[in-house]
Structures are given as C-alpha cells and as structure tokens.
Amino acid sequence: MTGRTLETLGLAEAPRDHPLLYPGAWPRESGVLHGNRLLPLDGPVHEGRSPVLAVGSNANPGQLRDKMAESGITSPIPMVRSRVTGVGVGVSAHVSRLGYVSASPFHAPASVRELFVIWLDDEQLAVVDASEGVPLPGGNFGRAWLPASEVRIEAADGVPLPGAYAYVNRRGVLHDGTGVPRGHPGQRELLSELLLGSARWRELFGVTPEEFCARARADHRLCERGTRLFADEGRVTASGFEGYVTVRHGESPSSGASASPPQP
Image 1: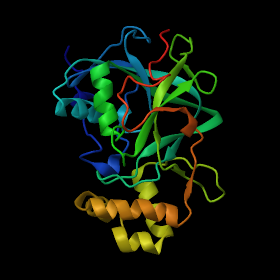
Image 2: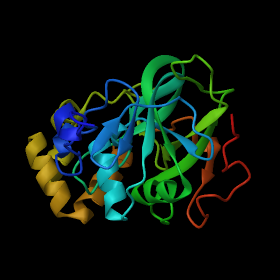
Image 3: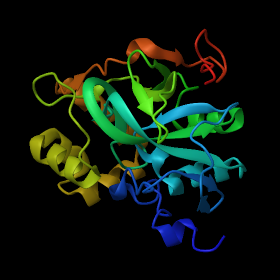
C-alpha cells in the first residue's frame, strides 16, 4: 500500500536519535505498525496480545520500529488510539542515557486524554520490557497492570478494556512544587525549565537543551548524577501506581499473579 510509510506520514524520526523531539510524533489515528508502514487497523481488541498503555515514545512508530528492528522482529503491532481516564502523563525522575527526560504515568482520577494502546505479542513485550529496564536490577521502570477499577480505557467502539499494562518509573515522578505530580510539557520546554531552575543542573548539563542532550548521551555517569540530583533537590514524588507493578527485576515477562491481562 503506497503512501503509508512512516516517512510519508511524518512518523519516522525516533527520539532515540533526536532527543529534543521526545516523545516523538504520534499517529493521528489507529493503525498497524508493520515494518516501516502504518497500515489501517482492523478492530480495537487483539486477542492473544497484551495491551500496553503508551504515554511517551512507545507511541512513536519510529521509536517502536527501531526497538523491534534491533531484535530482528518485524511482526505487526496494532496501535489503538484510545480515550483514557485516570492517567496523567508525568515526568520520570531519571535522566535517560538517550539524552532526554522521559514520560511516566501517574494516577490522576480526573484526567481524560487521548493515548495509544499498543498490543504486543510475547516476543514484542519482552523487547519493550528490556528497553524500559524492567529485567535489570537498576532499571528505570517496572511493568504495572492498571485495572479498569482505576483506569478506564475506551477505544473507538466505546467498550472499556479490563485494564492495560503501563511502565511505571521505579524512582517516581517529578512534582510541581506542591507535591503534586507535574505534567510533561515536551522535551525542549522541560529541559529549559529544569536548567533555568537549578544551578547544579547547569553545572552538570550546560545551559541549553542542546547541551543537555549532548552531555547526557556522552556520559552515562552524568545521567546517574542528574537522576540523584532530582531526589537531592526534593523534586520527586510517588506516581500512585507503584502498588500495581507486577513485573520487576528477576521476573519473566509472563510471570506474576496478575501479569497476564484478562482477555476481553
């Protein structure tokens, strides 16, 4: 099918290569990511696959394509645009080695927004788990099962899912100065604000977003120092989803009492 390449749709640039674009462009509508194409979607629910709520770059087809390509996976991934109630898109309390500060979900009962649910088979889920650091003792995220009692997720047909997975930052999220989780405004605005507000951050990462990205990508130890600085400066709070994490270091992607999502 012509005209459906990621380049044609403006979805090819991945934040891992262009950190200031984080979280990257999201599709305007649901589709099936198949290699370098985003094809029309046939239905919002995909049995035998795990629904994963994407709040950051996992909703960017270019980023998702590159993650899979590194592991030699070319199988299709349904991406379903959904109406989500109960989830805020916050700021992870860590500095990524890829040169950005990523998004992480937080509990926000009154929040209603459009997000993507990506439906992954077991092989694809293991790849995304690895990319989020789930299997690592010092990894940044755990995988949480968010039940419908806490988070309502509706695709175009209006039928809510029984729940979905989400990647919850193990260190928490940044707050707005009052202890309430803050939203993620986009990478350039966020970095400008963080650098302006902290002399210690400027000492580590420079004075511009471009300097931040270059320094963070060049030195993983600097990223670790920046991560500790979030906590040292009292910027971190809980996301409210910590109790729902079902897959942590040392567990297989399919292990845990509630690790397998209920099938619709």
